[in-house]
Image (cartoon, rainbow, N blue to C red):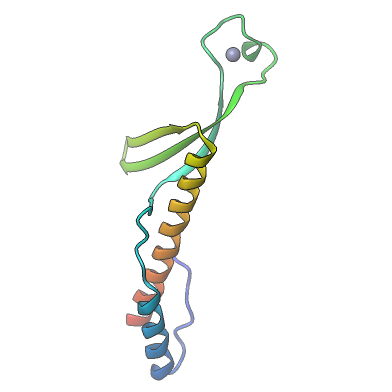
Length: 108
Ligand SMILES: [Zn+2]
């Protein structure tokens, strides 16, 4: 669901807000439509502690991107820098989506 923006303003105020939004619009090169998820898992060694006391291995950080139903890109991000880059790209995507949504609501 989209956030609902206050469009019950004067036409002049909406035009000014639109101009401001358009001037702020910027596509960041690292933009990412994806999710960063944390997973814990059991290994393949039958005698490992993870199969006994329930303490699984992890966390493992995965970047996941859904392309279609049942079609998901998934990448294991081992380095902290990779995880931070993913968080930044995801945040930049979210910010752009919000700006586009507000612009669309004003135009409507
Ligand atoms: Zn294990």
